[in-house]
Amino acid sequence: MIALALILALQETFEEAVKTPEGQIVLNDRAEKMAETLRKQAEKEAVADFFKKPLPDLRGGYKAYEADLKTIEPFLKDLREKLATEPAVNRQLKRFLEHEHGPGILYQLAIASKVRPKTVDFMKELGGYIVKGEDGYRVSEARIEELKPLADIIVRKIAAVDTIAKIIGEFKFRDLKLAEAAKDRLFISMILDGALKKETADEVEQIADVIADELDRAFPDGELPESKRKEVDAIFEKYERAKKSIKVLREPAHKLADQMRKTNDLDQTFAKFLREDWIVLGLASEMDVMAADPVKALEELITKAITKRDDGTFAVKDEQADEVSRSLATILRDFEKKQKELKAHVKEDYLLTPYGVFTIEEMIKTELASRKFDGEKAWREKHFENGKVRPGSEGEIEKFLKDVERIRKQ
Image (cartoon, rainbow, N blue to C red; front, side, top):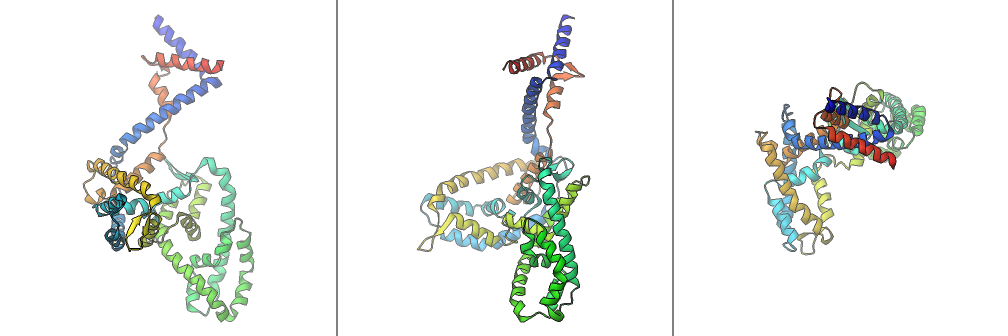
């Protein structure tokens, strides 16, 4: 009876303490530590938990991965054959590139996001503006006040583009190529490129107000004047490049849009933005996307770390040697460790390639990032049952109360 009375008194003292500012500080500290413990435990069990659900079919992505590896192989072959032997880092690089999975690891870690960006790459570029929750992607609550004015500006730009696209699309161009392109909003965005990049919507709205008259003046009777041909040809060059890029970018952008929460107006506004080609292209520009050109992306990467010598051989730049050597020493070992962990869960060989290993790793990370760990709830459940202190938890509650008293005295 005495022990029970002491426990009840301890429990009552605790409940009074957590109502105070000092008690909340200590409770928050316990909650944060418990949440971190839960997070670390989830990370340990992440792979096993991930495979408790059916794995999506990744073969389409794997075929694209294989095609890109074939495309860059001639470039890598030339590099391997011409790598210098001294200093040692060059031999280290050659061994890596000759490894069965070396080119695939290089592609997945440094090139794939540039030539075939995925939803997660858009998430990284959006830098915390859009976050993943358990009920889908959403605008970060911490950024709502910052994003509302931006959203209003973009909504105005889209409305102006709608007006301009309708007028241009209905204009009777005699040039057949121009007449066909005028029906495509992507082409319209190439014409409006400068105005769309402005921080306000004023300029594009002004264009919407005068576009009909401007078209009549610029293209009398629908004809393309010779004085305008060079300017129009330049727009067509941008348009062709944009079509190649958007073909790669639409799918991940639209996937992200489809997964935005349906219950919030601001979330759905941003989902609409991700379906606008010119907005997606703007994001891609920031992401340095190479429009599905893996050789170009590889060349750009290689030139940052490798130089061509006077004798025609290639060598790692002296200033990059230490960093390249350290990376090569760990990158293959890390891949093989991850590959070994997956072997217990997958049967298909393609899932054990760099494509499969790093794609599944990214999916697991995304899933973990979306989980919420309620540290306070877990801490309370650990030390209380039906509102009563659990046997064996008295010491923790006493320590909690001492910490409250210590903070109060400070």
